[in-house]
Image 1 (spheres, rainbow, N blue to C red):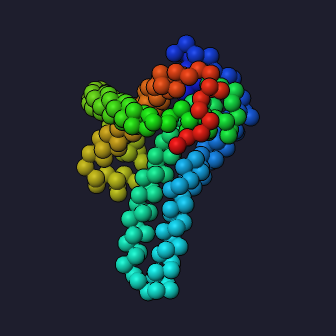
Image 2 (image 1 turned 60 degrees about the vertical axis):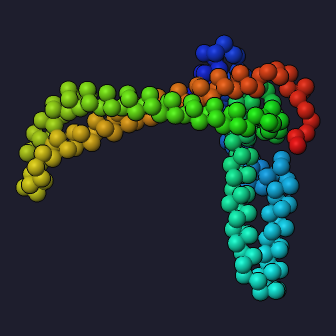
Image 3 (image 1 turned 30 degrees about the horizontal axis):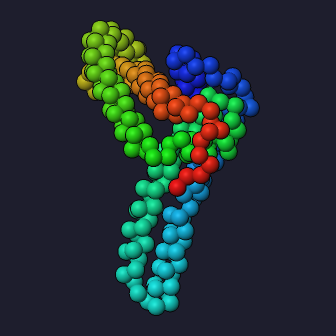
Length: 231
C-alpha cells in the first residue's frame, strides 16, 4: 500500500492519507474480493452453472449410477478456476481505487469491476509485459551485482568466516568441509542480493501497475458516470 501511494505521488496524484483505519479497511477489501471472486458474485451466471453441474453430477452419479459424468464436473471446475482468476484479476485493481479515492470498501470493489469491463486482456497483457520486463531487469541486475559483490566482498567474507570457524569448538567437525567459509559467504551474498533486488522488483512492478491504473481507470475521472451494471 505504501509503495502504491508513493507511486501515486511520484506521478503527480494526491491520494488520501493512509491511516490505521484505512489500512484495516484495505485488508478487509482484499478478504472481501477473495470471496467475491471465488463465488463470482459480480458474474453470477458462472456460479449458477457450477451449482447446476454439481446437482447434475450428484443425480447421475449417485441416483442413476453414471460415473462418466464426473469428467464433466472436472472439466467445468477447471473452467471455473479460470473464471475465478478473471474475477480476481479485475478486482485486484480495487486496491488502487480504494487508495486513490475516498470510496468505501464495497464501492471500490464495484468500481474496479465496472471500469475494467471489456479491458481484461488489455490489463492482463499489460501486467504480463510489465512483469516480464521487470523480471529481466531483476535478472540482469542480480547477475551483475552478484558477480561484482561476490568477487569483492566474497573473498573477504570467506576469510572472516574461515577465521571464525577455526576459532570455533566445532572446527574439528566443520573443518572437514573444504572451502566451507567460501560456501557460506557465497550463500550470504546471494541471499543479500536476492532480498534487495526482490524488493526493487516489487517496487518496479507496483509502480508500473499504478501508472497503468492512472492511464486506464481515470479516463472516467468522475466515477459516478460509470455504468451501473456489468454484463
